[in-house]
Length: 355
Image: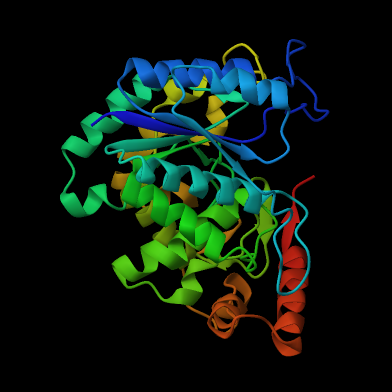
């Protein structure tokens, strides 16, 4: 199956201030877009750019003249997503919507095979991704091929957290993943992090119906960084089980070499002192996760999780009960909004950081 690509994002992306960034970073995304498009074309795949209306005309003209690019999709910028109980200050809806529009464009062109979503300001080792995903999917069942989405890393210091750089899957699997992000955009699922929001919405739309998971279990609220913390009362360990299932059967991390072969805004490939692969769960961790299950994570956070009992308050504290109700009702009300604020405050207080 050929590897196709939606190259998604702006054409000008200035880096935000941050320590340890290489000095060579550039805001011009055109070189990385061309690198990705040409790598996809060499493998007989189809690449489209999905960006925003109003991008630089000269950059658009440059890309339009590139033979390796099949087309450019320009989507009106939707801005920040709405929220039923307060604003979210990032561009998670922009990413989801423009990626989905790119996938739909590939469908209109009659593309078959596997689709990778790669950012406009990054490059990734396309040949490695193509080879790995093709080999993996060749051994998967027809049902699995329609639901598996490959990610290039899950966060090692938290549950239900993934990176949002690269996604790969069949057209069906990729469309399903990003349709859930767009359709559930107003319901920010108990985390301020887009990295956790992506997972929780995918769980609600795809994972839960497939494995019979209760909808409230799709929205756990452990903090996205659990390292060095202590929870009182502790989070019940049954919050980990669904995450193990997701990482083994639904969101499969790619090999470490994908991470270490990436560039960002013209940087050298990711280096240990800037973007350390050790902070990610990659495919190399799969055997340990399959073997150890929940214990893979319990050993990392001995003061966070409790394997005993099922206390009455654990479910309200550890899961976003109100989110499924908001989704079913199309919005929140004063009671649900108050419950959400109270639960978030209590959970911030119950998880303490080690000094």
